[in-house]
Length: 289
Image (cartoon, rainbow, N blue to C red; front, top):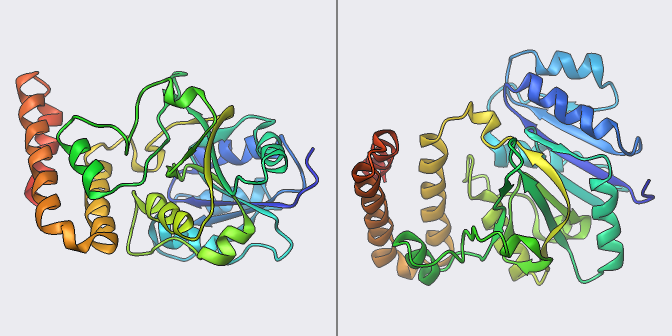
């Protein structure tokens, strides 16, 4: 059991059963954890938490705030004595020793300020969960399918401890001083890409972000979106354009057309391969970009 004081911040939206399992996994570990849940929905999750997890600090905004704003509400409520913060999705189930091992990694690697762990999908496959911060150049190579620096998928990349540009917000642990200096998530994002932008600000402030595969958690992925694919893909591309507008406004005139071209190529490719559903998804994204 670790001696450091850690706060877990969870943003929930109508995921009662998943949130229950997430909190149940946390309760198997260190009883000294401070857990904050921001419940944006109305499916009985709040009542379940009050009944089964009275130690949890529950925040109910009364509306669907989205991930960024909801997480910020939770971050604003952390205890002053917190040393580490863990941003955790409701559909992430940590192993019993994951948090202890994460804190131990910080203790033995003082140059690490933010970390993400190995994530497994429900079927046991590894989920790509880290990468290089987007730039106009690597976004173009990503969109036309010749580079994967932004979203690497090579299993070997995720087999080793490494410094990265961003880690997935499904499991993102940091020293509290990172939050104190950088602030919270950009609320112009509703969902998707907000953690990448947050990592950009952390990197600019001089903090080091690491991916550590030595411990892990199971991530159902899209648990809060009910398995919807189109919504996340669309919001990711909208978030990417906002990110580029914020940090590389001078490049928008040529990068955005390339992103649209990438969507068109995917639409055509999936159509040729006979995957009508995905082809229609990219057609819809292209129409709304």
